[in-house]
Image 1: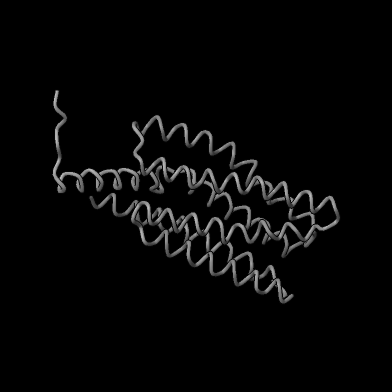
Image 2: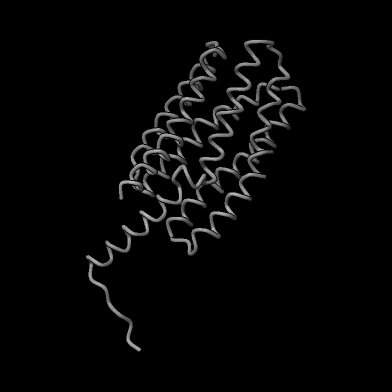
Length: 208
């Protein structure tokens, strides 16, 4: 049986349909894994911020481990449910999942490295995790925007990358980074990287 040939217009229509299907799956109402991680990061950061204002202590930084612990548990359930409800996955879904799997792997390896430095007597190494949240996660968000053709993702990602490099420059020159503005900046970047794009995609989907 001869395979059916499709013209360029039909090919573009199929690609567009794939993109729209993937964009629908990353909408806020579906709570895709990336949005879940963003919400978890924002809540944890806000918790650290408010406790720091009330009773500052270095032990507060242990709260950041809420993100990987709760995130891994939530990620499994959300991803599994999303696959059941969404049916077949597109190439764009595979690429998107691949991006965030790489980010997760890097986060795990960086945590191990920071732990080793901490044991050796260099606890400030954990600052690398903070830079990771801006630069690596920001880059992944920017690429996500290119993949699903959503400029708000790219804008938020690029902004976070620039903020991350600015913070690194400050650290290299020993310019103090005060929690009173660093944590709110962290929260703002995650809102712009994930929450705003998800809401925009959701609104566009409702209009269609």
